[in-house]
Length: 169
Image 1 (cartoon, one colour):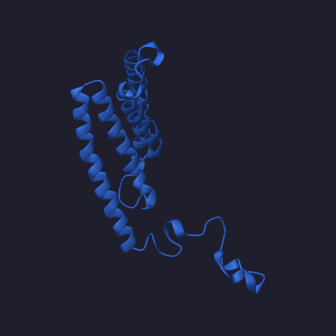
Image 2 (tube, helix red, strand yellow):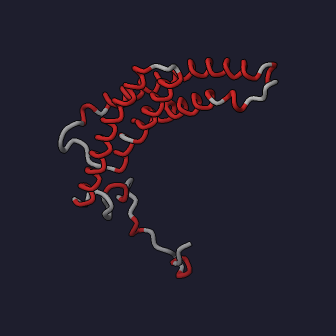
Image 3 (tube, one colour):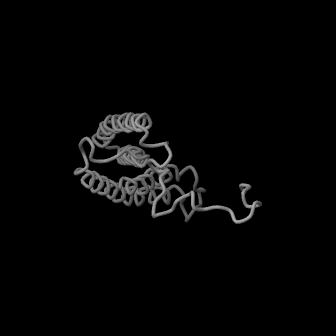
């Protein structure tokens, strides 16, 4: 569910950074006055990205509350999809810093710094749970985790009809 946070947050980071460097890239005679066009572009992009940043925060809270009922021991088995608890949220932290810098807003930059600590804790927790799942043979083991056959498919039923089909392609 946290995967929905990433696209809008990374878009914020990219667009704000590109708009900040538009003056360097626009020729002096771009649309009459290149510097003015770059300034206008930066203002429009910053406010559009403010909305996208809010959308990313909204998606974060939707995903966080959706997982609230699964918190607790034995309620959710580890899968490699748990890394989506970490990596899309790095985009949100990056976008928070981009918005803070774009608007020169120190409180938003402080919030970005505060977001780093829980993100690092979540990464350590997910990494620990991955190592634990490997040791307990919940993942990276035949018929466990992402390797299990689903939907009634059994690998043993598929046999080549001719001897020539036994060679892998």
